[in-house]
Image (cartoon, rainbow over all chains, first blue to last red; front, side, top):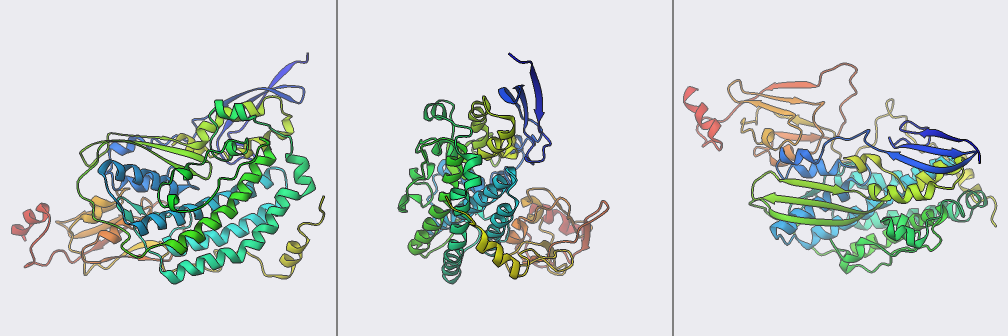
Length: 359
Length: 133
């Protein structure tokens, strides 16, 4: 039995720009216990709901996260629409779906780059981010913002996309598909990648279920949970299968995200084929009176927005449960028993977004 | 087992131009939809204060008495809700980003035309102002 020492990891760490603090208890090079701490970037966004009108709060809800901003805004808006019983135009539903899939692709490419960077594979990092730029260009051309889109509003969306632009977007995505394929080959088949990822940080199927893992972390452990299957927005009219990998190691979580990129392209193409003509927004009067638990699938997993209103312009309560927050207990389990050198890769493999987790 | 997965990509990158832009020297790429910063046409503003009420960051301050329209560009998050709600279309979105600042500031004040005298005025605050003019 060797002496135990504690090593602080974060909140400032070269591999992790997010302010997550982990106290790693080590025995020699082995991690035996992990004590996570968050609370470095708490902004009090949920309290702000009492001071801003429910229609203005969409912009604040979008700023909960810098990467999955569109889906946060969309989930909040869906909750308000459910309380007020609004049937929003179908074209708006499809546009929301298209933009969510775009933000999923941009988030996954960002993560794949950072993941490669965490194991010192700089050139894959650069190549992932170069492809991500194509996605961001399309987002900017259609919404006006690269990462904070700001297109959702209560009762629809704020911008329409012309049919020509929609076709052009699909053509562009099909154009970069072979480049994506080449890059994903590196992630999935490169021998150094496999050596670094296979069998590292294994989360068993039961652990993933009982610790409440969501998103790619759960799907990488063989649990087929994908909120998109519940059919919110236009997902109910789209054919797709959630990507599930059974192994539960870092490689499986990486493979889920790599394969989801192609699912996203498929979903966008189906949306563009099926999108109906019509208005993109509707007039909204009154204020929400009631409560609703709105759920959606983010790139990192399931997000829940709890919204409660009392018939006035300002909501009473807004609570967000973000996917990173639920993925911290599985992360602690993953880290126990691993080598110190594998810690950065394992922490990155759950795609931590601490800005999200703390609001 | 596969080797040299990235050779094709590496060779391509060697013989093409850089994927990055020399940003501050060359302007960043812009689209027509890009939200850069808010601009005002002072001759069209009727000081209705809708933009001030709708602004989620409270960056806009309209003084009805003085007939001024003021924006704190450092508070503004460029959401364009003021542009969407402006009844006279005096606010527009420019697709150029504001240049970076090295000191505190960002306050921009404009003297605006104010409401036209014979037109009915929407907000009660403006109705109070009318007799004084």
